[in-house]
Length: 573
Image 1: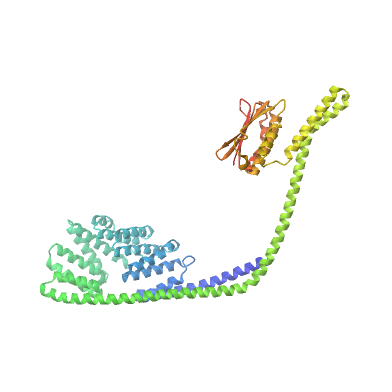
Image 2 (image 1 turned 90 degrees about the horizontal axis):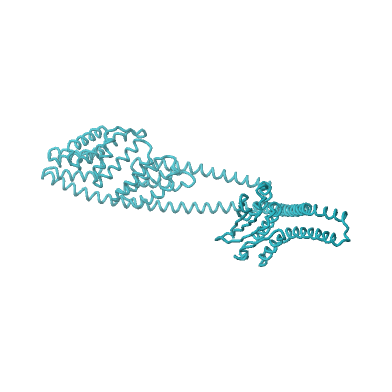
């Protein structure tokens, strides 16, 4: 046993060291791969970023370690997939990370996952589900800035549904507040400008809020001009273009359409450039609009070709990443199999010797222990039984024997009358010894159990006590367990013995009754001495109660009855 323990301790330590070493190696690899992925993402090289984010999530084992890196990588992959319009793949990727959101230590991963899922449903025109996931993200968010950003996104979803008043109710309390982003301070004014822009659009579409809409658009533009970000200004100028178009101011309409177009060109946002060019065609004069239209058609064709090319390139990246994933899994499996085979070969013989030795020692010990215990328990049981019988014989017969000895000394046995009395005393001693013998003899539990039980109960009947038996044959005893039959037999013996001694009844009845899946046995007598001996009775019936508990039964007795004494016990069939 000592050798086996030492071996297993050493084996466990070796396995632990190997596991820690592999974990350290993987941790370094994950960190380097993730750094590469983020560098490519920040520089706008999304194809390379996708490749390394995918490689990162393959290195992680979220069930055991690195749930943050795993979910974070999946979120970044989703952001790239959404940029390329691959919303089905984005949803599938997000779902992979959901089971591990609660295991992440940084709450931003869960917030981002729900937010990306909301965006995915927005892009696929399911605004209700988009709102549902934005609200899940809001519950997880901690910072005031992140919460206000999500509220703004929910308001935007309401705008898409035409629920402008609901959007206003969300935006008005937070639109003009300068809520700071402590992690990325540059986002503070971007969000504030965006909230004012959305609030202005709500006022614009609701109508009867001409001044409020213009104030929001101008305030949003004023903040946007301080950001030095042409991309953010596109929306500001386009909103003012729509405003002056609605309220019939051709000059300002054209100026804002031109400014929106110029910002889109500077930002190199081809899609926005085409949209703003469409607005400029509508706002400018006929001659200029003709020239704008030629440029518009050329750009639309160019954008269609470039998008198709980008989509094909990205499809190749996804295919190569999947191929790389499959190859990595295959290599991992081969490596694991080889290591397992080597480990098995190395440890098989040692383990076999230890196990065989250990098994032999344990087997010998168990055999010795069981044999000794069984013999000891058997000896103790025999000794206890013999002592109990001896005490009972002494208790029951001592007075009778003394009495008969005195009788023989004081009376002439030659006389017929004395001889009859002497024989009567001997008969009483015989009956008592017979009863003790019956109490300790083997109990019949086969089909003759009912007969044996009836004989035992009838054995207590004498000239001073009549016993009535009811319901003994009202159910089948053959369906009752052997141990329960023996317990019933012994319990009734004990009850009759105690009642005969303590209560001195002249009439007793024993009733057997089946209640659903239970057997109820009730003993009653007309004795009236038991109330004064309640303490003695409770002590003597302790053995009865213990017997009934062994068969999961219950015992109830009534010592306060006006008509005598009553005791009952119940057990399941």
